Image (cartoon, rainbow, N blue to C red; front, side, top):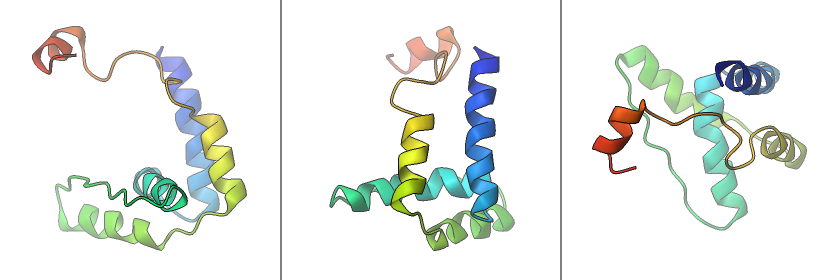
Length: 97
């Protein structure tokens, strides 16, 4: 499971580097871009433990995706491609999943 997810992360990290962005910024900007394609407003609300992280997160709004960028991301991470659960099994029960 971990190996599969690390390959996905590596592919996304390569896109982030091409965009002169961090993986965190890509992860914030991508759903916003997807929402604008669907005429919906999707605004992720990331947490930030420091002012530096907050500033990094805000810069995600500056990322501009081409249609090809979005298609590439959609090919890399289609719904359900990540392996495993979001939380350990015990925690999944606590969040009713």
